[in-house]
Image (cartoon, helix red, strand yellow):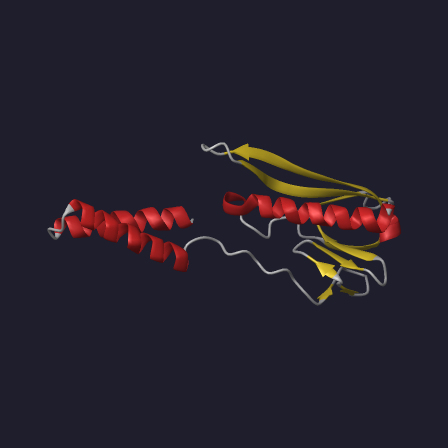
Length: 167
């Protein structure tokens, strides 16, 4: 989104200055400065803040989070985990009901060879017959501009769960 804002602003300002008689170099430079300014002020999706407070699920006592992200929260004293799946349904499970989990993502490579890890998801296998699997998505940051931040957040949650359950 920021690149679109930059290029559109640069093009509009440059064309206006060229039609008003400004030299090409000056028009392009002023257009670039205007594009950078507007892109930094208005462009792009801002990262959402991690939620805090109480987390709710139907038929469960509220969970007070020790650690929280958009679709996952952990209550350490009570050893409970709040999950919101990809359909938006929330549930609270005791850590003893978590049998396994798997972090998956998709690698992408841009034209400069930089690898991005996007579509970060974690699938939980639960010891519950009515709900044996739950898949959550890590999407607090834009995959377009900062998918690796979602990957790092998912890796941190994986390490946290490994320490608590297996450690």
